Image 1: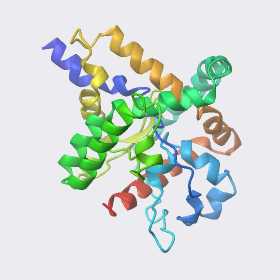
Image 2: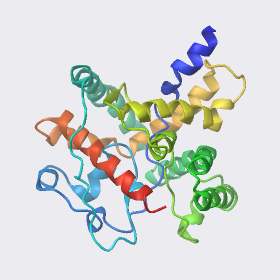
Image 3: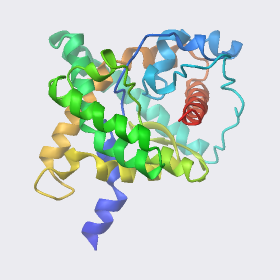
Image 4: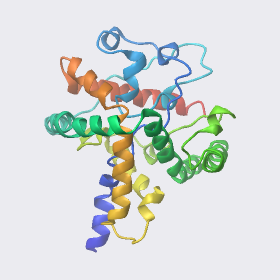
Length: 284
């Protein structure tokens, strides 16, 4: 029973560093697709920095094919009954980012070239293909499931285990981030309240519960021995996640440092990306 509680109650930690950016397209500026409120445009460099507000990539919320910009501020209010706790957790995250993660990230970035770190990030995304395939099927998006299968096969072979992304570069098979939080939303489950998780950052109750499914569909989780305290699995996830974080940490911290109320800024950005995600899902 204790093992069951541990494996169900704590798996959210397993995605501590794995829910970071996976792909970046950079083909079309985000602002070409979406209207930007003055409140946002006065506080951030939208093209460059909006990508890291919630650790998602440009490919995740770009909506190609739209004739008119989408209003991403149609639902600006966020239910935040745990604001006192969230602000404390947010402050601790920022403190850790400034005084622990950033010095390590600077050293790692100095040693490992950016193109290598980007390739490792793509490999991380390739590893998580089974989770995207399962969620595509659970959402009855069979065409997307086929694309995920094809992307995995092409990138694993020609792309050298996913270090490169020939499926997108050559065949225009666009990458997506598809998780259990999106599946729950597709099933009609509401977001619930806003929540800040240690290190992981902004989420909501629905997506937080979805992290349990994401944990179990990540192939790294199933590296033997099959126990929660699997240091091989933890080490790989931590290493991949830390690598991914080094690519966007500077922009994220700049956003927080330039804002009068960083907590509200990040919460607003999370809302923006949730709206972008929902808009993107309606196209499938």
